Amino acid sequence: MNKYCYIIFFVLISFVSSFAQLDGFSKMADSDSFKARMSQEAERTHSISSDFVQKKFLSFMEEEMESSGIFKFKKDNRLRWEYILPYPYAIVLKGDKVRIKEEGKKVNEFDMSSNKTFKKINDLMLDCVRGTVLENDEFDLAYYESKGEYLIHLLPKSKEMKNLLQNVYIYFGKDDYQVASIHMAEESGDYTHITFKNKKLNEELGEGHFDLK
Amino acid sequence: MRSLVRGILISSSLLFFSVCHPGQYHQFNKSEIEDAVLTPLFNENTKSQFYRAGMKFRDYEFGGQLVFRQMKEDVFRIVIMSEIGIKFLDMELTPKKRIVHHVNDQLNRPIVLKVFENDFRLLLMNDIDSYKSSIKKNVDYPIIHKLRKIGKGKRYYFIEEDRAKPGRIEKASKFGNKKVVIDLEDYKEGVPHKINIRHLNIPLSLSLDKVK
Image (tube, rainbow over all chains, first blue to last red; front, side, top):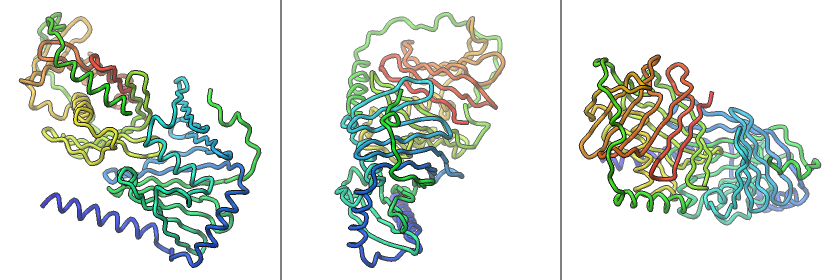
């Protein structure tokens, strides 16, 4: 009996969570135009710098865990994801190489192919920021829009990805077609929500931004 | 991660064939303090405890976050996740049961889950009522709680003079071989800000730094 109660509870949580993310959105009227415009914007975006705020919700905790930092992206595959609060931590992706810098520790470097989970999540993040998420074949996509935003709902196809994330929602500004926020929901109802602020496009970003010492 | 799991499996298997030798705790004397009570680590604080986690297995290093949340007096929820919030492990420990709410495919091995369970039970002390306790002392520590349980080996909680919480925790086999050492430092308001868990028979360690 308990087992069935758990299943019903998690189905309800996922159902309610889906509605919360889609609240105020309707099916996109012309998704082909959106895809074409996304492709154009991805083509003309060479670099992005932005601040971000990340909120992690765990259903058994009374408060969200908040962290913040900066991220920098340079075409094709350079990404710097740097936390400043609550503690400094930086991760740089350069092709298949990952470098991590933690406070007081030497830089740790490894090959992304050695960690499948890490690769899947980073591919997703990279696809989100460079606008190529529509080509990610790990997910089925559904398109929505509101007055000010576009929303792509990503449903994982593989069991492995479903084990990590139940639903991913990516919000794009209607003015610039850039990612405004990402919502990654898990089966349990726990989620991570990342909001991007103070975005700067196509600034000159030297290689030094993607080196960690 | 696969090498981590394989390594833990091999190391754990080797334990079955390890040679027994005399115990390492014979330098203890019986303490004059007979009524000291062992206080569980987070019993005074029901809030979530948020730590930065660093796990090392051989040359493989993993960084992330760890949350301890006391759900009831002796029930804890433990979550290990990446910096970006992707959960690797979500485990609940009651005094007698382990409930795995979520585990990443790569960690989903019985031996790996058992290692985490044993380490967290040793640290959180939510099952100590089922152990037989006695009090010892040595040159460094005036109070050492020695806990014994048939088939479970021995645990030692080393209490420094100026506080009721342990500065060191050790786990030994029933033959007295030290297996796990936990150092707890930098206590603030009864909560350790630095925790270092070291396995002596597996090249595995976990360091936790409290996030302010």
